[in-house]
Length: 156
Image (cartoon, rainbow, N blue to C red; front, side, top):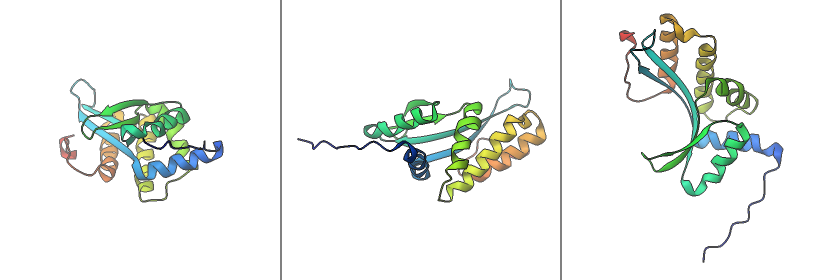
């Protein structure tokens, strides 16, 4: 028989710090860039914030969804985890960014957040609607999105 775990609720003022600490280890700030022929600029830029966990620890993700009052939960079949994700630019700017400004990360992930914030604020100002803005955003995104690229700056 599996022993039951007694969970003590976090005091409300502890939740923001807990969220930041958890995200420092398990969160991701990402900017996806994909070609879209139907768009005026031919490029789609999608910032997203996500946190992944094994499904048996989904209560932490549910707590974050409640705390931020936005986002969605989805299964990530690539690594068999559950993911809490926020993609709405307005929610990123109005809820996610203010949280991490007030409760900063301690690891080098803070640098990724700072760049992510810069991209989101540029998009809020509609800078992604022109070639120069897209080029700047792509350069920023490349500094946090390590790995293979579907796009190259010279093709813009």
